Every structure is written in structure tokens, then in C-alpha cells.
Length: 152
Image (cartoon, rainbow, N blue to C red; front, side, top):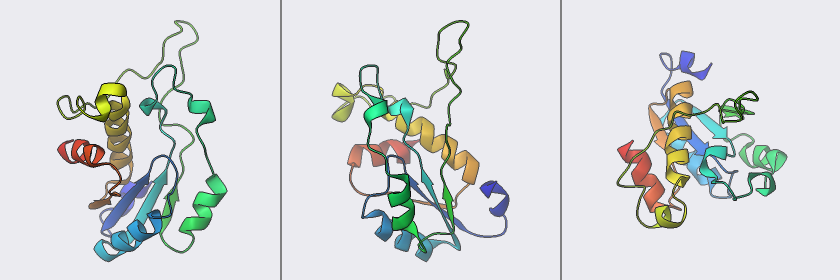
């Protein structure tokens, strides 16, 4: 696992949690300036989707993401799943533990998407625990998301 490398090198993490945007390549450049190894995680995070929001139709382009990152990072982490599946006996989701930043997740986007930032904080915590980065590089697309992660 990546965390075993953390004692050997300075690691920078980039989370492309909903696919790699074109600007992801500039994040890779920033990350490589701050660390010896760059890890990019690509994961469409189901915990950001509320009931009624259709995760199954969310656009995905795995090969396009890999193509955009070719030669720009040392490790590309593409987990199939980070949450356990639903419990067929009880019919409930097996994943019941979440990371929340209560006050920061309430206003602005949190008004219309009340579980979105809980999903963001949870998946970022999981990925940080897996790769144990010294530095994390995020885009500037969402100020509230950046604040939630910084507070977390």
C-alpha cells in the first residue's frame, strides 16, 4: 500500500474524486514541486450522492482520466469501492460511519445537498488514511469544499 512509502519519500496526494479535469494536470505539476512522489486517486464517491441523485448516470471516463495523467504522477489509485455493500439481510447500507464538519457543511451548497460534504470529508479521510500524504493538492473549483477538507 502507498502508506508504506511514506517513511521513504515525501508524498503528495491529489484527489480526483469525480474524474480528472483538464486542470488536474496543473495540480500534478504543483504536487510534484512539493513532494518526491505524486499519488492521484480517482474515485466517483457514492457517499456524495443523496437518495434520488443518480449515481449510476454520473459521467465516467476511466481511460480518458488515465490518458490525462500519463507521465504526470507516480501512482494512480483507482479503487473499485471504498464502502461496504448493502446488507442483504437487513436491507440497510453497511456503511454507517461518516466524517462530518458540521457547521461548514450547512450553508451555501449544503442547503440543497445536505449530505454532499459529509461524503466529501468521509472519502478524503479514507484516502488520506490509505496513502498518508505529506501534502494534499486540491483544485480551486469549490471554496466550501476546500474549507471542509481544511477543517477536517
